[in-house]
Image (cartoon, rainbow, N blue to C red):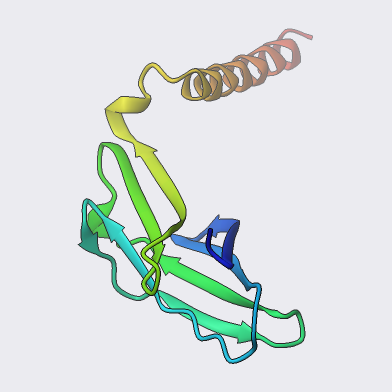
Length: 125
């Protein structure tokens, strides 16, 4: 069991962000390794927030890794090789039958129908 815990805070503007906490002695310096299809992902940063007592982790998602299908990123502690977190991006044709994508399309169509109906009501009165 690892003394290191990584908790996702958000995925915003192409950057996955999380908070890393460590149970144990001071002087801890995290060394993380992020991979996609067993290939390293560059640009990972960690900085200590001493006031809050944790580390802020930022993993930029390279644009060249965004493509159709499910893309999974794994975040590991380099010292212990434990998997601390992972995240996945789903895009393209794989979403064609996803219920969330269907709901989004239905909402867009409903908005279009509402606008057309309101325009019709204004024009006929």
